[in-house]
Each structure stands twice: as structure tokens, then as C-alpha cells.
Amino acid sequence: MKWQKKKRKELSSFSILFIILIALGILTIILNGQTFSPQTVDGETVNQVVGAKISDIVMAPFNGFRDAIEISVFILVLGGFLNIVTQSGALESGIQTVVKKLKGNELIIIPILMVLFSIGGSTYGMAEETIPFYSLLTATLVAAGFDTIVAVGTVLLGSGSGVIGSTVNPFSTGVAMDALRGIGIQPNTGVILLIGFMLWAVSTAYSIFIVMRYAKKVKEDKGSTILSLQEQEDMKENFGQEDKKDLTFTKRHKIILSIFAFCFLVMIVSLIPWGDFGVTIFDGWTSFLTGESFGDWYFGDLAMWFFIIGLICAIVGRFSEKETVDSFVEGSKDMLSVVLIIVVARGASVLMSTTYLDLFILDKAAGLLQDFSPILFVIGAYVLYLGLSFIIPSTSGLAYVSIPVMGGLANNIGLSPDVMVMIFASGCGLINLITPTSGVVMGGLEVSKVNYSTWIKFMRKPIIVLGVLNLLILIISMLVAS
Image (cartoon, rainbow, N blue to C red; front, side):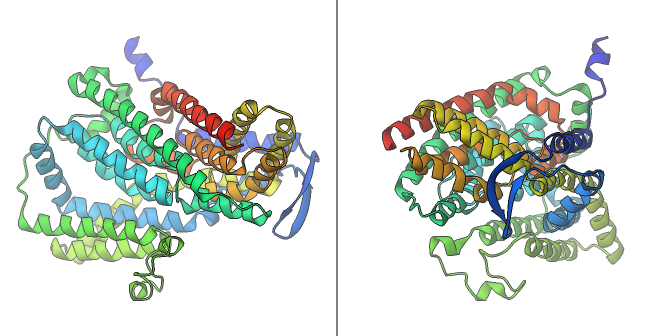
């Protein structure tokens, strides 16, 4: 009976997302015609929910794919690139070498990586950009004696805690401050940076503590893993190292891994919006490859960058033309499930924006909050953003929709619009650690072969503690700033 319980059939990520998609569509039908304060969307004034038609629900995944075409192509190319490097033997031999050198000190790699990811999250909203790291770090951390939950926690909680404490993140606090200026409110950058730094420090420290505590427990006792038996089998099949022979770390392997590291370094540098920070060193000369300078690259540019580097790795690895093509196609095929998950998740978001359900919820909630005390206002606004972020996982999209309403409301009732910016950033960041409508969450779990239900089990208590810690900082900030 115990075996049967562990081996039970769980809902797949696709099933969860399709259920959410249909449920949201039905909700719009129920609320069809419900009015809200007039809002301008793409130059048109709207003031009521439009019930989704069957065709809207059916076409939502396609519209999601159209909306997410660049990241979808990038992920497929990434899969081909990673498989070429894997087939060269460089990745496996490199991981074995790292694990041997860290023997007895494997835990140290976790806080280092999480701090780096959190800095990326706080400064430029590192999210989709983390997907390439799931495969690499899962293999490395499993080989070091941990499980796949440790790998997911390292990447997702690392970058996510940074997004919670966004400082100069142009896709979160940057867009929100711009939205405030759009309604005639000048944001206080110093206040926003200070609150962001406090949220970043507390969230990152607690996230590291949670992952380290679990990792240490799994390292000492493999039976303490929260993975189901099926997930453990998947981990051994996809990332296991026990049955693999020792490989010699050759000079060719070192060259390929050096190219591999350079590729990821360029990815990170190219995505940081240097212009927003007044940095112009990359302007012009870095545009020779894709036509866009570093700082203006997006997933289309990255797709072709990884494609070119994949070919270079194949040449260094002395692959034949057929081996190169076969390896690339096989790797892309492995990433297809990740792409489909992102497509359906994005489809749900597109459906909500086209039916104006997001505007309806925002308007009604704002009306309820205006008579609250400062403490209750912060708590209510935070809860509101948890709900809105479930519908609109995109922080920049949610900022443009909500901040003119919520920032303006806070200013009108004598509260700080600057703290409202951080309520928005923190709420979005927190829910995007677990929301199934986020392609990053579901895609990362798919790459690491972790069930969504298992991740929720792991995050059950940490998500509550993180929320309480963030609320304490935000409440105190609102009382001081207002």
C-alpha cells in the first residue's frame, strides 16, 4: 500500500494549466458585463468584463505561443546546444571534476549560486534567463549528493528572492516608477532602493537558510527527500551519476567548457539593460552579430547566439555533420515539453487581459482598500497583488495596468506611492515562486523533473514565512514614509 501511495498518478503540468485556463474562461463568462471604472487599453476605453467565447479558450494556447514565440525558439535552440555539449562528454567530465574537488564541501556551492542569482533578480529581473541553468545545476547538484528539489530551490528561490527585493530591476521597479510618472507622481528613488535592499537581504538570507537546511538533510540521509518514488527514479535516469564511469577531463573538454562558460557570460551581459544605468560602453560595436547592442538583446538574439556557439562546440568536439544535426534535434526534442508548458501558461495570461478580468479585479479591490488604515491597506494591497500576479505573471505588464490605480490611490489617501511600488514588486515576486501560470516556474520544474505538487509541498511553509517577513518590512516602511 505504501508503494501504491507513493506511485500514485499525479496531475501533469499540462493538466494543471489547462484546468486553470478553462476555469478562468468560465469565470469571465460568469462575470460577463460586470462593469468597472473606465480604463484605456491600446487607445480604447473599456469598462466591463467580456465573457470568453469557446473559441477564445480554444485559441488561448496558440495566442500564448504567438506571444511567447521568442522565448520558445530560444528554449528549443538551447536544448540543441546543451545536448551537443553533453554528447561531447565535456559537461559530464567537468561535473565529475567539480564534485571531486568539492568533496566534503559541496554545500558551499549553494549559497554562492543563490546570492549570484538573487543579485541578477534584483538588478535586472532574472527569470526566464534562469531556464538554461536548471539542467546544468540539477546534474551538478545531484552528482554532489543532493536531489532535484535542491537544484530547483537554488535557481528559483535564488533569482526569485532577488525579484522580491527588486532595486534597479527595470522590469519591476523601473516600469512601476515610470507608471507613477505617467500620472504626475514623482517617485522617490532613494526610498524605493532602500526598501528594495531590505526586502532583498531578508528574502535572500531566509531562502538560503531553507535550501541549505533541506540540502544538508538530504546529503546526510537520502531517505529524507520529499521526492516521490517516481521522481527519484526520474532523477536517477536523467541526472544520476552512480552508474557512470569516471571520465578523463581532457584538453578538448576544457576548451569546450571554456566556450560554454563564455556563452553564458555573454548571455548575462547582453541582457542587462545598460542604458537604464547610463552605461554606454557596449553601444555600437557589440551589434555586429545580431544588429542589437548588448543591453538590447532579447531571446531572439540569444537563440542565434546559442546556435552559433553550439556549432563551434561541435567543431571543437570533432562531430560529423550528421552527429551535429542529430544531437541538436534530439536536444530540442527534450525541451519541447518545456515550450508547450510556457505556451499554455502564457495563453492563460493572454486570455485574462483580452477579457479585462484583470482590470475588473483591480478596480473592485482598489475601491475596498481606500477606507482601510495604513496597516490594513498594506496587507490588503499585498494580498491583491498576490492574486493579480496569478493572473498576470508578467511584472512589467502588471505594473502598467495596476500602478496608475494603486499608486494614485495611495497618494490620494495620504500614503506613500513609493512603498506601493515595493508592495507591487514584493507581491509579484512572492507569488511567482509558486504560481502555475508562470512559464518560468513550470518550465524549470519540467527541466529538473520535479512535480508541481512536490514543489508546493516544499514551499508550503517558506512561502508563508517570506510573506510575513516582507509584510513586516512594508508595513514599517509605510508607517515611516507616510
